[in-house]
Every structure is written in structure tokens, then in C-alpha cells.
Amino acid sequence: MKIAETIGEVRTQVAAWKRAGLTVGLVPTMGYLHEGHMSLVEEAARRCDRVVASVFVNPTQFGPGEDLATYPRDFARDRALLEDHGCHLVFHPSVEEMYPAGAATFVEVCSEMPKQLCGKTRPIHFRGVCTVVAKLFNIVTPDKAFFGWKDAQQLLILRRMVRDLGYGVELVGCPIVREPDGLAKSSRNTYLTPQERQAARVLSQAVFLGQKLVAEGERDGDRLVQAMKACLLAQPLARIDYVQAVDSETLEPVHTLRGTVLVALAVYLGKTRLIDNFIAEGL
Image (cartoon, rainbow, N blue to C red; front, side, top):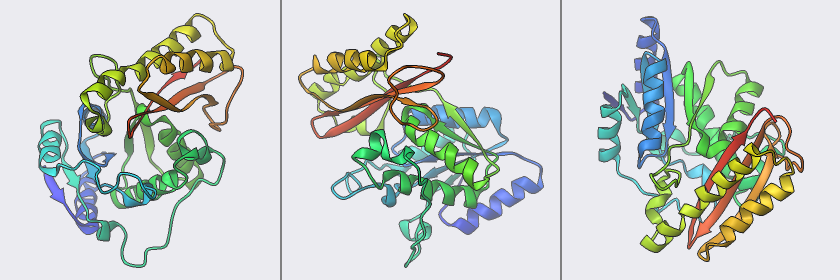
């Protein structure tokens, strides 16, 4: 496995692979990797000849007062994990490499999509995500890019960006990977105190309740959301940011479940904000 710190190194290696007729998969990450990330790398290795993973804590997707400075980092550990799971090239750039002095260009989906769900409390987040992913697509020119469904809003917004800008890359959504007690894997889980970690199980409990109700025939979005909120509120340490059922194309709230619906939630445990969701299809 090779480590590249510059855009030029990545382009040179990918160009050589493509001359040899090899397909390239990209797994963008912010590092501090866990089993969820590894599932993306493994899927990329199954579906592509070569796998590129980026490890870059992207500053443009963090707002004032968010955890950019404290976001967990351990590149030596990340590097070992990636090599063990079939990665061929790690792109580990500096901030200056990705955002040269005076950089003033951003990529933004100018619809209601980035304003919904997490966008209500993180107004610049998805502009930063779209910008860094667009840059990675331009640098790596992958055939496929792999993202987890845990960040469902991110994946759906990126699909819109790819469609609108005509990128020749297929976005592959991979299932949420969970702890044995149901909590979705997240780098931010490390912020939780033991008591908060125990309480955090309530997120997946609310998700599983929502899935059960939909499977039983619930189609009233408001009743579904209220039942999931009641589940969350039974845990005293949980503070709800949002619970919403939204259209999978626009991310705007729906009151009746039809077609494909994203049911998503964000909850604070202490200072840590965690997210979870499920997709209801064929309604």
C-alpha cells in the first residue's frame, strides 16, 4: 500500500492504473477509522481493481464551535487498518494541499436538501462536504465511490451533486455497521462517557421501533415520528435535535409515507451529537 500526500502523486498512480485498464474505487474518510469504514473499503475491493482511501479531516465542513480541533486522529492506526483490508493507496494530504492559500471556490447544492435535517443546525456543513468530495473526484477520478448509509443525508446530497455536475462516478451506498448493542459505528462514539455510551443505545432502539411500525403498516409520518420521539425521551440523558420522516429525493418532511422515505434522527448525549436512520422503500 502506498501513501500519497500530494495531488500529483495520486494523479500519477491512478493514471498508471487506468492505462493498465484497472478500475478505481474511492473511499473518502476523515480518519479515526472503525468497522464501518472498513466495510466500505472491503466493498470497494470487491467491486474495483484498485482502492484509494482518503484520510483528511476537512475543515470546511465544520462550523464555529464544532469539534474540528478535537476530532479524533490516529493516522498510524488508520494506515494499518487500511492495509489489512485491501486498500492500495492512501491519500493523506495537508490542509494546504487541499485548500491552497487564497482558495475561494466552493461546491454547493442550492436546493432545500442541505437545509433539512442536520443542515438546520449545521448550515455550512454540506457545502464543505460537497466541496471536498468534488475535489477528491477531480483528483482521483474514480469509477465508483463508497459511502455509508449512516450519513444518509450526505449520500443523497452527493448523489444530487453527481447528477447535476455530470460526474462519471457511481456512488455506492453501503449498510450501516452497528455495535453488538445496536449503536451505529461512529468516530464520535469515542467522545461518550461510560454512562452516555450506555444511554446511546436508545438511538438504535428508536430506529428499530420505527422500522417495526412501518413493517406493521404504519403510514402516518407524524404518528411514526411521535412514537420514535417517545422512545428517545424515555432516556433522561438523550436530548433530541430532530426526528423526521422526509422524502428521499428532496429531503423535505412528509406526513404520509409513500414511495421511498428516509426516517432520520439526531440526538445529543451530553455534548456529543449522534445520528441514525433507516430507509423505508416500496411504500
